Length: 421
Image (cartoon, rainbow, N blue to C red):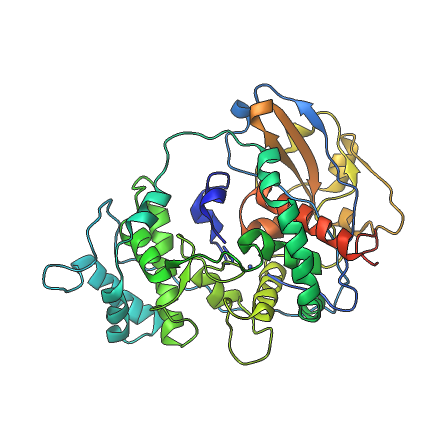
């Protein structure tokens, strides 16, 4: 789940893949419900907003779900980082004049073989096929300019008529599978559909970059030498790809995706595919490109594993005091309690049939900045908001997913406060 447009707005790219979708997606049965809480927000004039908020963070609002029985969601363990190999800002290929892997890449191949239990010959054969991709390197090159963030502009890119219309069509077409995934994972149908809509316009744009080339380029020839942790992340993702290929779960020779190596309808990085992907159509295989049920189930599993709590809204129906900005820490974990905010002057906007369960969980105050206009919105976010930021570590992203979800749910007749038609 990575694209060039989002990179301009999102938090540092390496944070995007800590779990991979970043790490990912789900759906709902019976009543694919969506709770429609009032959104807590305050809009204020803040002329010094760019100085006060120098972080790449953004936000989201959306819906609840029927609560399934508590289920342990299995996942593969995270693999250890590959220590061998290094990145250099260069357009050199990965082989020498004799067609052999360069020494650092050969050392990388040996470590991948040992740590991932893949025959060395298999690892080497794939790395010998990898090619430096100058377009990938260009797209990942830092611009050197700070772009002013605008929630209004970002939202308009994703919560717009085409995504809403095609989202309704997608929901109607795949409704039984969406309902099934939503019921199993406890993630609202609207959220599942929305994530796939934001990521790939419901599968229309999944990326055409060879994943093997993209990951090798960013792992060994990353253009930003000031952030070695980024090239490390891509070398680890390349190891995940090689392991998936050896196990027959993804063909590294033909797999295509985004310029950062994310694949399929939900744009999972190889590490997320390895750890969080799910077989939604029960065919004993996982295909995030060709199987919508697999994509839906994988999104649901990803969110549930990363802390989604069935039945909670994304944003609390609460009004914040005028000094809401003091409660924003820019983090990706809820660190406040509702009593703390209540004592500071926040209050609940009462709604009929809306559960108050969210008050028993940690919450956070998030900001949605519009720097060109010197404005900011503040909202009370529940653990489900922060689960969405595990998919893409951006307040803007999470809020866009939730708001697109709400639009879709309203049009499908699931916009009531109890998540039912």
